[in-house]
Image (cartoon, rainbow, N blue to C red):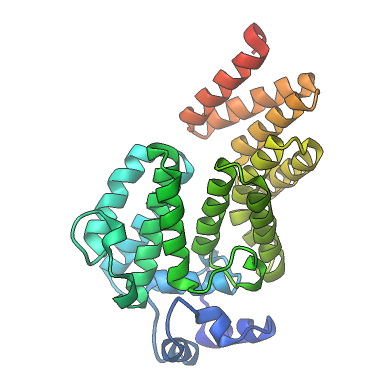
Length: 319
């Protein structure tokens, strides 16, 4: 069921959470624009509305999205589709859609997002550039395998809305979902560069940020599983198996309880891996089967094939 959120409600939620206006709007729009939004004299674009709701810890999926035009709606749908393709690891399709998004919505020629005039763009363009840079960095990580380029783009992306971003002080920032996704990707790059301690610290800071600012558990399920997938991977690499398995159970429970099943196969897969290396091979084999069939049921054939390959390597004909 959808609920309309009024300007008065926005102000009430902000004040009830003891947040300043600047904490909510910083990097998304200017003070005057946010003041007009709270006062009901200006409607934000769909993308700006979503970011502001996320900063307030509100799941925008339960609200009417504020659409000002057909183009506004199409842009919002495009960002949702690209994000979904990246989560499903359908990188070729994501590349095509992202290039089309850049050409259609970003005011520079070609698909080289690093050539954009970041310092001179308005608030709406900053959000577009941030989304494009963050999404392109994910493709650099998993397709081009260029971690240095990915790290540079992620830094550019996060400083568009948090100019003084400091990876050791993440818990002090009020973050939108997009900002969390970008910071999560930054931690992934650190882990892939074997800077495990820094990656783990960032993941735990993100989880702390969610616990501190998000209104209830249903909002946490949007972000918790994403963070838990990467955090448990990293903990496994440094043999902190018990800690990682406990976090997998938290992630699995969130996914099941709130019917957020997109990342469930990956978390079960991670737990299978962790159980194998901690010496519990019988339970590991069962979890490999669960994650494999779960991935196939959700249409993620690439992940299913990856699970089958890894399980076969460890259990030979038993899988």
